[in-house]
Amino acid sequence: MIEYWTNFAKYGNPSPFLDTDIPHWKPYGQEKRYMEIKLAPEMRGEIHPDRMLLWQKVLWDKMEDEVDRAVFLKQLLKNLPRGIFSARK
Image (spheres, rainbow, N blue to C red):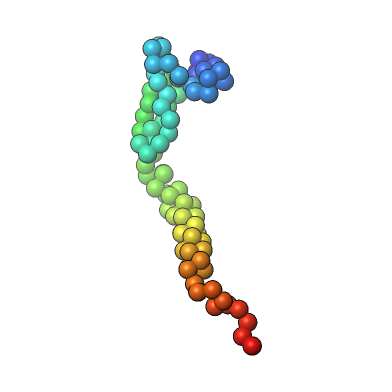
């Protein structure tokens, strides 16, 4: 663990070199892989998918809906004819 922290502080990457004794710590991405820290660290994938699904439903889906609505309204207002909301005389 100390080597990971040292590398991260020094190079901005916990495992910048492929030819070391420690497993390569890959960035988190679409594969949803993470480093399991233990005596023999290893890259793993899909941490507790049932728990992650709960948080997806509880938090992220709602937030994504709000963002989608905001983007939709912005596009809608952008595409309306000019002067549609101006006061009539």
